Length: 312
Length: 283
Image 1 (cartoon, each protein chain N blue to C red):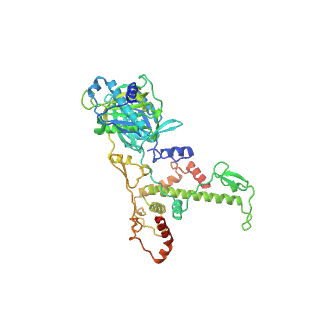
Image 2 (tube, chains in turn red, purple):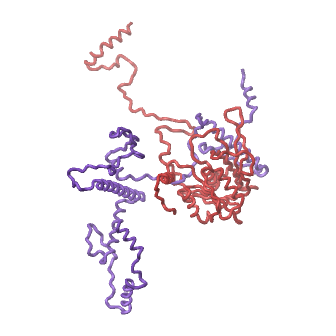
Image 3 (cartoon, rainbow over the protein chains, first blue to last red):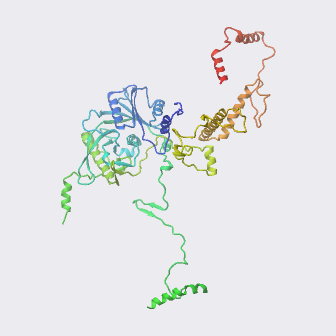
């Protein structure tokens, strides 16, 4: 545990306040850590992922004695110290060559971890072609039915979406869509069984004759082929707490308005009791209401006038 | 005039933006994400990997673009902004939901009395100088009366009394009182945050303090003044050495005491400790 710091000046107070839990959260910060041994492939992958995640990212270049699946205390320390909830640890060993561990934290405790081995890689620097600007919001594409059916792949989809989407926003500049991060899961049988293809492309807009442009992709790098290794899925209770939506952000319930499956909106209106005394029915002489004598005196002149008009 | 053929000819000049999929692709436009659950062609993937991946990703990215361009657009100084719908794909939070802060004693009181906060003006008119001065911050706030060069001595007080010292003391008292209340509010808040009753916590602390004081008298508090509602302490008994013991043991015990007081091994005076205590006493 880190010692609790009592802020002594306004600046540190502001920093601590920004680290408090909030209704609308900041974008998640990722930190990139090297394990006790790393290969060039791992180093390049970490650097490229860091470039993609910038500016919400911290890159550590020194080696650390970290073994994520054996001991998570150092990861928690890293998370707390840097106020980061996404961690990538790169390691390289004989048993698990070119290893990346993606860990996600909730409240500075490990929620889930996915270990991905790099089968083949092309770094961003080795790829020719245009690169996207720093801090652009990426488009994301996930291909493969495994992302819908397999629990591990589902979690991977969630992890990668969480990792790259950045700060949540409510509007996007249409000219700011520069690159797309794609993840493709190969089927579990066959030659490339279970490989996961991570590709990043820049987007070029072409004329299409309509408002929406036709797009073409250009490889930007990094291109990584992953293989799943050890996996720690989030615990159900922790997941439930972590996905709780604050009351303030829940959409306000509108009474008596419903939507059906087709998306049509239905409204219900309550009219209240109808006053039968005042209802206008067909006018007949026999049904005319007779009030008291006083009433008749007051209403006589107008009635007479009406009759006169009718006669004319 | 039939323009449909002309339109078609115009369209044919460009590549199409339409993409056909067996299973419709799902989108979360707030995250700018597309989830395609169509089966992957394993054969093409192994034979022409990069080409196939690029084509597949282009198609899905095009579909995502088509969806984004359907969104309502607002034009601003920064360019065209597409308004994104709310997020549907569930992502976990980073930290738990913020807890509601427990009310301070003043806030509770103000609530029962219906006292409402109202914002102070940044600048207030100072009638003495005829100028607007800031309510707080630089050159603002109440003027410090302890720094006045002249102070009136009221007729009903001792004329020799130092009015400056009096003002200083009064101010210090006020500050200390507020600090004490602040501390109390913090303690109570931390207790309620842990789901405990602040009164019970305070009671427990007091009882622990009483137990310590009792242990620190020679008679274990037997002759101390009793406090109302005081609980009887359990398990505290004085210990007496037996009247008749081995002579050697008794001799050694006495020698130990003597040695501690005048002996060479025993430190008679711990200078640093003494200095520290003396300093503390002077404060």
